[in-house]
Length: 206
Image (cartoon, rainbow, N blue to C red; front, side):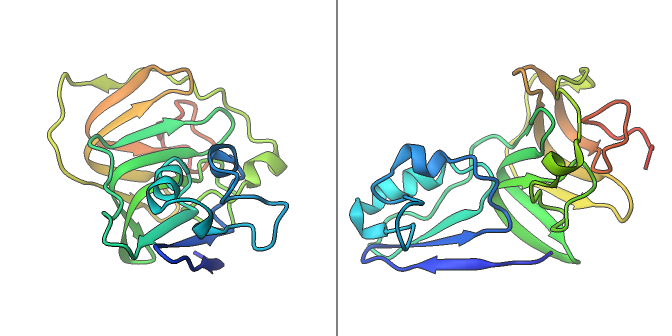
């Protein structure tokens, strides 16, 4: 997993941006252009709005490329109450919540991330946008696997298995690209090779 992180220091809040995880969804630019403006240098200017506004918009970034650190005594980011995976049509798995992601033998705490599911990212387990260049196709609709009525609270651990799927253990809801609940439970394997016939779930095609 490579990193290329840029830091933008502000009076009340610092912002970091990992360009290798950025998929240019543009939630930041659309949400607060006075701070996030790609026509300016630097493109992130944290002091142009309040720390609360900056933090709120960063929380909308689905890839986790943008992060923040409060310097004004304000709260750190809290994970969503429910752990979710949203399948993007012809794109990544967008995960949100209390995520413990095993990367290179170490566990990284994430609240937002985009995980590769085409099998071609050079920044695995994260998506780097390669799916658009290789012509990855999948409508993200999927078929329902299993849905329990309620889930306990707590983190979900996602372990990318060597030459295998993302193994998820802990409370998790998987949502299709058209908004349906495909899975709700505590143990599931998600395809990350791009070859499964039961996407987003692994069928052993790897």
